[in-house]
Structures are given as structure tokens and as C-alpha cells.
Image 1 (cartoon, one colour):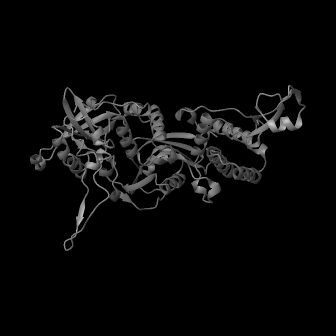
Image 2 (image 1 turned 90 degrees about the horizontal axis):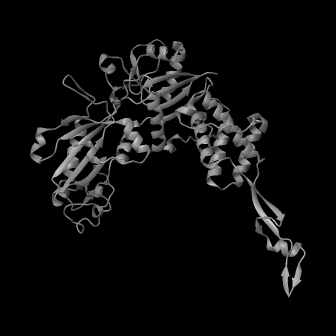
Image 3 (image 1 turned 180 degrees about the vertical axis):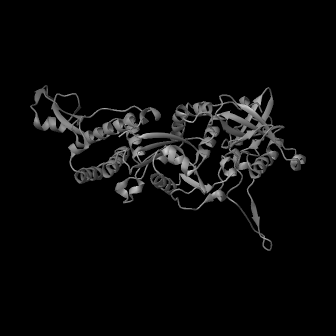
Length: 486
């Protein structure tokens, strides 16, 4: 069955009528789909208003707790997810909210899926259904992708067997050779014309190897039909002429897998067997009307933050004694295992008794970097903001709130003593926003005059080309802070 494919933008507001047209099904079927998406936390409802239609963010107090009804126009629907979803014989591709110039950004989504995979592949590993009776836990798409990635990395499931040969190339079995072969004696020394040897060979006809290859082949064909092989940049494999039914009825196959699990102690083999169990247990296909699968994240803001932290020269976890500084105060900071430990923690004191308790948590900036260019040391504080920031003569939208601004100033204050002691006077502070453009842009700065007497730097704004940042992240390339032109 050919699956329908459509694109949606993260955080865009859609009316029910718009989704009926995009899904290309009737209102009743659309309501079923929306209810399923709400159940998985992928979809949120907000009041239908002109204000909401123009927003690209979503606050908790804007979310409406309401059931989806046929034909209602009181609410707008927001997809809080980036990735791919399959349900109702349909593929929904949800791309990041900062992409506006292309309504079907295939190339950009393909790269984003690679970034999500690197960011947290464990998030995509589903619970195995031989450990739970909850059928909603099964994620067929994630299982197929896991099986193919595992196959490309480790090859087919293998079980080996020991073969004893005469004068073979394996290890010599001396006890067997001495006890079971003819011995020649020469000058009181024994000689053995025939040696018993043992070699370990893979059993190409092993039940589980064949089952694994059949599942891989079937999964490859389904992913190819859904056009997922190219989207996920993965090769399909046609390595078996057998079908799942050739291995017996479902209950028999599951019983065989359970028995194999009881004698296998290799971690990779155990996880692979459990995944095969989940696949056989569910017997679903991606194009099924009732199938539901997903690959992506509801927290793409954390992905953007991780990309910025990895690509830029983050030194928060570097011990102060290992930093290159204009003034060396290694003895004072020798007990600090990281730069972040310098930030003061709240100290709670009792009024009537002389005791106090320090909190475990404190301020945590995203990125802190110390650079040296022509003896001009610069202390840079960066904060990755996953906002659709727009700033021009005509409008200001998508800007961080007052709490983000004040927190960024507090980061400067937290390190003020450290920078002054080490002779660093060049302090830079900056928000980092993603953009679909192909080059970095400066979008001015934000300041608060009430804090001017604290000698704090204004907070600059930089629009970073997301595709280039992702490319650096995927290839483990660092971007010098100097490229931000702060």
C-alpha cells in the first residue's frame, strides 16, 4: 500500500479544516488522528485567535485541555515535535519551526534526523514487548531502523560451532591427539603424524541467523516503499528469500527466541533477540491503518543547545588550572575541578541558630569560552536560544523573555570576580538563534539601563545558519568563537 506523505511545521497553528485538507481524509478520520497525536504528547490545542495564529512559541498557560470534536473551530492545533510519524497509512514529516522559505524541506529534514540520531539515539530505542503487555509501547519504525543500523555495524546474528579435524588449521587438541591417535617414538621422543585440531565456524543455517536476515530484508523493503531509506540515509539489504511464515507460527517463533535468550549472555545478542521478539510479537507493517510509529523529539530546543555547546569552544567543564589566562592564580583555584564550580550557590541561613545550608544547584550557562587573540583575552558567555527571533525597524517578535535576559546578566556577575582577578576586561555576552539562512547575521543587542552601573556588557544577538552548525556537529568540527564577531 502506498503511504501518503505530508509536511508540517513545528509550532505552526493549524485549524481542524486545514488538517482535514492536509491529511486528505474526512473529519471523523482527522479527529481520530488528532486524538492519537494528543495522546502521545505530539499535539497541543490552543484557543483560536488572531494573536495565536502569529505565534511561533508555545507557553504552558496557552495550552487548552479539551477533547477533539468533529467540525469544531474553537481551537488551533500545534505540533510540538520534530521528526517523522507514521499512522493511518500516512507519513507526517514535521520540520523545525525556523524554516519558512520551503514548505517541503526534504534536504533539511534529512540532516535534522541525523542530528537527532547523534544527539540521543537511546531516545529512539523502544521498550521491548516481551517485557510488557502494553501494545502502545511498540514503535515499528524505530525497531526497523535499529535493526538495519545494527546489521550494518555488526552483521547478521551468528551462532558458531566447534569442528574437530585431523591436521586442520585450528588449535591443537593435545589431550585428544595423545589419547586417540597413533604415536611414533624416535630417540625417546614422541611424534604425532596426525594432530587433532579444533576450529570455530559460523553456522550459516542457524535458525536465528536466517530469521534475522528475513526480518532485515522485509524491513528494508517496507522502508524503501515508504521512501525512508534515503530520508534516513541508510542502505537497505536484500539478503534472504525466506519470509517470516517459513519459520513457523508466531507462538513457536517467540518460544524459540525466548529459549535462545536464556542461553545468550552477549549484550548485543540479547538486545537483538529482544528486538526481533518485539517485531514478531506485533506482526505489523508501516502502512497498516492502525500502525503508529515515530522517530524524533519533542525537545528540539535541547538539540539546538547541544549542537551549539559541541560546535563552539565550551570550557565550562575545564578546570581553571588548565585554562590559558593572562594572570595565573592556579593556587587559588586548584581545588576546582571545573570552571562552572566557581559560580556561587545559594546559601540558606537560619535566623535564630548559627547554621546554614548551601543549595546543590545554581546558575548554569550554556557555553563559556576564554580566547586569546593578540594578547587580548576575551571571556565569552553564550546562550543557545531556540526561538524564531525577528528584529527589524517594523517589528520585534520571538525574543527571549525578561527572565532569560536577567539570567544572562547574572552569568556575567557570577564570573566578575574571576575575570577581574585574572586581568580579563573584554567580556562578551550573546544569544544564539537558529536561522535557515546560509550565513551568520548580527541582530543588534539587548540591554537594561538599570544594570548599567554594574559595568555589564549588553547581550548581543547572533543568527547562526542551522545547516552549517549541524554539519559541524555531525563532523565533530569546532567553530572558533572569533567567527561570531562579537
